[in-house]
Image (cartoon, rainbow, N blue to C red; front, side, top):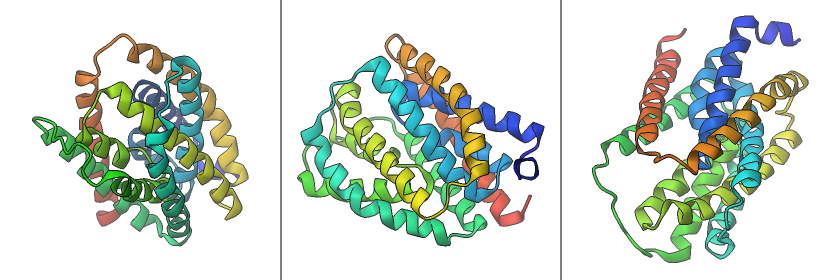
Length: 253
């Protein structure tokens, strides 16, 4: 029963996560899993979090598409998508056999590494077209695996595209369609393996309106404000959230 899964205070935490995640995804084109996982792991059973991340992320991505209408670069995105199709079922299979503690350590460690890497950057490393489409496909496979395992399909392709160089708009035109399609497939895969329960759908229906409204606000802010300060604040929150998750897994609640 839902009442046994989440109480009123936990539900408030879940909705806060939905709001922050919606805004972040609307603003940056990715990030639902990164900013919401920490809060949702505090409030929900661990097995519920990846499917909820995926459902909320797809909603926020669709809102971003409707409001921003980016010119997707499908030829550049194709290698990433091909790799994602390979990595996605592996991630879903890993999720089905993961213990809650392993899930917390895995997601928390990834949050810490990603945030620390991004905060430590003083200048972008440019690798240009090194590795070509084959390297893009390998990165896509990693993103697909993390998308199936924890709804975190975006960070690996984004980091890679930042290393390749180019404008934020051109990078978003590649990683946003990748995120959307991988996460749509992840929903289908999770549903087929029984990971989307009735209680999860009830929670998702409560979260989605909050996510959609905040995604719209985030997409409007994206068109008007430089993301630099905002990104560093989010990265700091991710670092704290990841360390908290790892600490919980190692020492218990």
